[in-house]
Length: 76
Image (tube, rainbow, N blue to C red; front, side, top):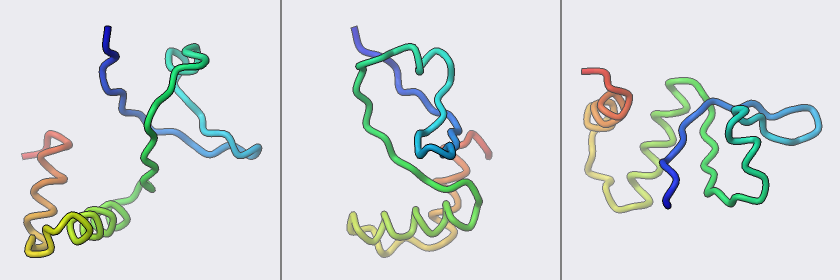
């Protein structure tokens, strides 16, 4: 059985570990792919722009990227 994708906000703790939601923290030994993205709109736009360039979508405008971000967050 496949696990659904989980999305949450975590915090880097003083010992270098990442905080996890309680239900995920109980899944000891389970392997996840982790993508760390700083919270903050400007950081998110920069990340999306660099990812677009890396993937060959450099022709996307800032407005295109903003639309993608808003749609991914359910903002219309």
